[in-house]
Length: 490
Ligand code: BG6
Image (cartoon, rainbow, N blue to C red; front, side, top):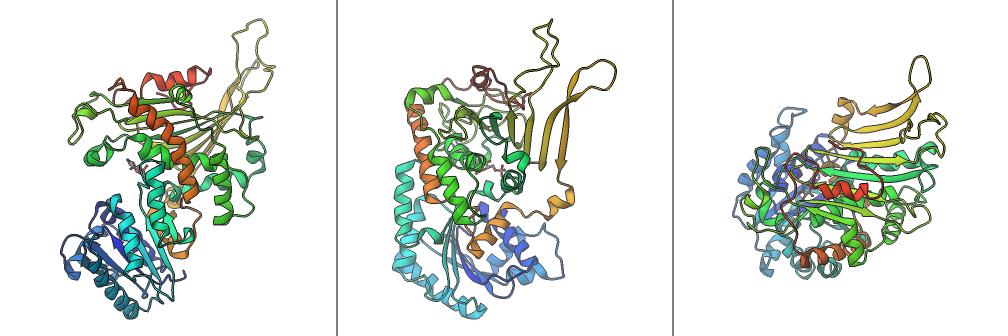
């Protein structure tokens, strides 16, 4: 492994994400040698804390990871330092500036600086502006910004935020996190498509009938009601994760597998996504909110949720791309909380043979052939399955669906880095492939804004689905109307 040298400044160092994901990701990079002697992390948040207390917090966060050598966790934590900070006070940035300069010298990080924002989004802009104004950027190494979601709450606020960031950082210095892009099987979409003639040559409206993307969650809103009730599934999952997955499914082959070339194609794909009129939006989007049932309380009764909340915890939609490859092929997507199970999968449904020569001509209802379906299992299992038709063994001639499948072994899965480990490393390397560019985010918001506006005006009939189901009946009707069904159903 080549060592990455940098001082990382983390805003939100005592937050939930830092404790659950970021320190473990950094520790894994340390175990693998991507981080070694020449890195330091300066944590900040409003709370007062000593370096020692912070190092203890970091050690606690990583205590479940096995050490590969004795004392490794303790050595790792010695790279962590802390300064309390009020992001609205310019003079506090001077304190950070001096500390960063000291750490740079002490750890020999060659002037490389990575700023990571993992805190209340209303401060993202202020922090970025102050980083420049108070001179926290270095002149000799790289200056990069990693920024967590949410990136705005509609196009206008996202644009405003982006304009603020742009005063300090160029596009190629900004890394907007979408952790779904760090998932092994989301990255595998590209290998599957562009590494296999038998897949990519059929990847268009001549052979594909429809594509289905499901991001299903079993948990409810849990402790995040304050954020979630103001956001809803459309902003929380569709605008970012689903749009990014769909862009990878729909895009053309990049000239090469580099971040700039991949971005160009994703942007082009999102540009051809049909932005609905309000009446099209009403016809092609379904929203839901979970009721009580199956041993859990209704969303509206959860702690911190408005008892008359109109926030959606479920979305299903039909998306259309207006381009030569996809014209006429619906992309059905859905996501929700308190559904039957926790999983993410993509089902690509191929067209049936135009004529079924095996069907009994005397019996019109005899339709023996099934659609070929390519399923990409993203999580919890990772792999693909291809459903084909084959002859049923025995006398006579009938067909039956058979499955070819590949699932990653447990040891493969252990090898695969967690999204945050991978994304941290990419950012340290300066590789943008698995981050969302501003243009992608902008197109995604413009598409989502139409739906949001409509939903903000019209009062929903909530609650409308039972925990443990796959969402409201309208989600099934969305496909039934087109003579189709969700491949995954209960
Ligand atoms: C986050 C959302 O972006 O993704 C959460 O804010 C959601 O509401 C989570 O639960 C799902 O991520 P994963 O990796 O568990 O599928």
